[in-house]
Length: 187
Image (cartoon, rainbow, N blue to C red; front, side):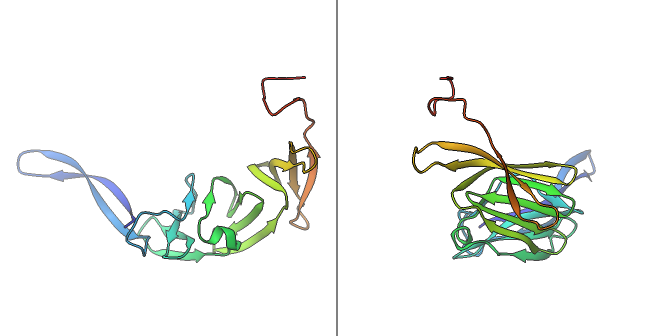
């Protein structure tokens, strides 16, 4: 069973002395399988306006839920993953701009509105493997690599999100400076 709780340090008084203890404000069970969360991983601390985003496990799939840190109330639930991620979402590459959370897994890229749980982006980049998502000002950058099918090498690539269309456009390929995949054998 996976239980999530929000705790608060509070001074507890007794007749002899004051003790500091941790009292739960609320607790919530986020697994219907009475087991550990084994279908999904969400790395990092993703918060929006006093609420926190967490994975929620069902018997056959995992979703994301926004939980109020005030009372543990579930504000919304999202499960718009591509079928491959529905059973085992592993979210490690994230970037948040205001209320929009961008995240990616292998070649699939998502945008999620944290204010209401609506999908803002959902696309695939065939043959591309997302390694990091970052940005500055109003520019979102997605970097990773493409597999070169003829040589078997990984080619580093950077995409930029088009502000008008929301599509990811290839910005450039990073020049190869290595003779092999061994990063210490420079040419």
